Image 1 (cartoon, rainbow, N blue to C red):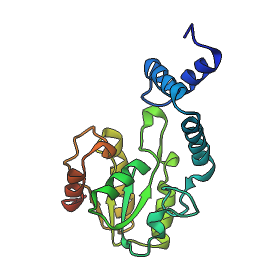
Image 2: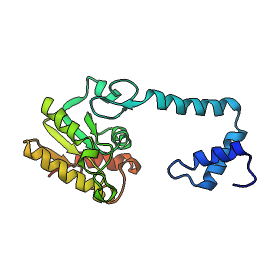
Image 3: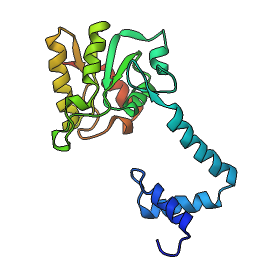
Image 4: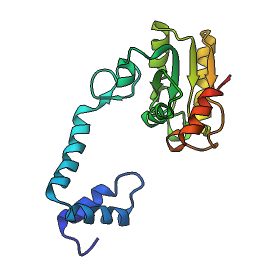
Length: 199
């Protein structure tokens, strides 16, 4: 990064820490920010600070929320007899955008990955069990990603829930194996929910 003034180097360094952003992309983004009107740069900086200060985890489902509960949990019209378990908030948003689901969610914030040191205690599985003990659901849909980690997580959750007598279904395959829900089109997601299967 020789040739750049120190503030530009710092900006490039910070931007390149974002996932999927390499040095060249970070330099292009920095150049855009430099040439953008000061108010645009200020709005960007303020929105980042705003998110860090105001966004927290929903106390019910662990989705991202501005208040104590997220919009989904606060919506009285949702069908609370059906609970859908997802790995990340991005997956919840993808399912919501499909328009095919009107129940509630539980966000695990990850998937089992023993090689990476991620075990059941690192996910929101304990909170899930406590939630279902307090408010049993008629059906629990396991909508983890169709990857090795997602399938492993689905098997563990299914075992725990079936031991407690819950009806457990898994989203139908249709999402490519090894894929990620947040990158799947709406129609595929809607069909996955429509044709889910028992486990």
